[in-house]
Amino acid sequence: MFGLGPLELMVIGVIAVMLYGKQLPDVGLKVGKSLAELRRQWSTISRDLDVTGEIKSRQGQAHTDTRRLSSQCDDEESAQTSPAFDPPTSSPES
Image (cartoon, rainbow, N blue to C red):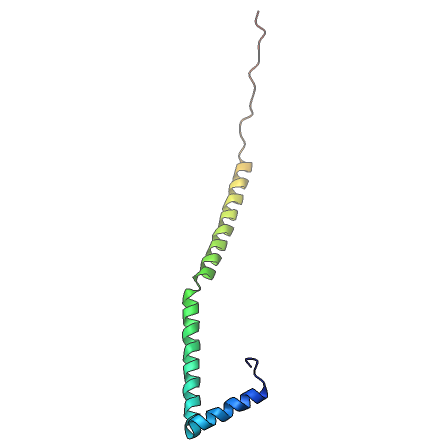
């Protein structure tokens, strides 16, 4: 936990008890509620700002639709037959 060993955590606990004493449960509750609210707000902000994922998925879908459309056009072009080209015949000039 944050790279703290058991000795460091014990020292922090002793300092917290010396500073807050009987109010320590209330302080812990307030800190916990503040952290929960911070996480909730952070997830809301990150969800609102995560437009790039939505745009990428829409672009991927559009790219897939474009490939489908182009393959359909290729199929239609191959189905159409064009008239055969007859080169002009050259007649010997006399």
